[in-house]
Length: 106
Length: 312
Image 1 (cartoon, rainbow over the protein chains, first blue to last red):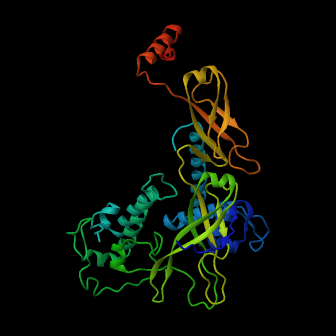
Image 2 (image 1 turned 45 degrees about the horizontal axis):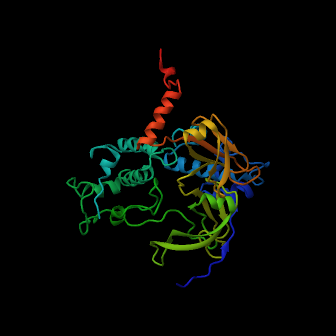
């Protein structure tokens, strides 16, 4: 069989090696900038930096921002509701992990 | 092509008001949203109800759908009658709920394919970022690896229709990567418009299910069965780890459920995770005379009641 030569693409681990600007984060989760600003205001995302132009979001923000975007788009949840839902989902995930650690379920 | 009864999917009668439709959709969507539900069918159900809602919430589409009549049932073979949509004008635009361009054949036959959003009428714009999930072996996270992956991506053809395109990539899997983390491949997303740069491709990492190991963050779990005498008397047994077998010392008097924690044997990193070996006890079958005799000898040798804690 013919093997096509493919160049190896180096990926960076977002959670460990990447910080995102506001523009990059919006682009990565297809969210409007005003939504991301509202989530920051509600504490869903916690960038470092003085003004939105200087903000840097940790790599973990990508997962949270995408989740926030899906919840607000699909369920039409407003920013305070998104913040509450994410807190509760985090708590459920932590409880499930504890169950798994003691060998029950999931 | 199978008919889809959008009213049945949302659980509302055909006479439902727009408010009823919205309420029913919201309630189901909260229950089956794939980020919220652990139901294995959640994603398919959610997509289906998003499609049903996209039609029923829009008075134009709903009227067009309704005029096909109520004699159709879900799953019946269906072809749209010629000219079925004559006299309806669709405003087009955003279908809202559900991922755009990802509807059933049934939906597309009726309402056509549609691509949402995207930069238009701009001379230069950056390409969209794309996302995909990839399944890797746990061993790849231990050692790092190069893996060929193939992705299916919707692309627009010259007529503006969506077609699926296969794409093969060779990607590095960095050592120490964990489930739920993302790899960013710069410039591998959607093409830019004009002189705009291409978007990025984000790959979300997940582990292939493994019959022996399960991962929780950096920590990895293994269930290790022991014979009763190994658990009681202690033993040195071979145990598999994602990096290869190790010799494990089982302390005497180990009960089922005891966890042995092996430092640095979880997923590598700083700090590396733990490998937890969870002990279970397997009973040998008493399927011949010698084995039965051994069990009888045990019964004689022990003054053992495993149910003391059940007595009042």
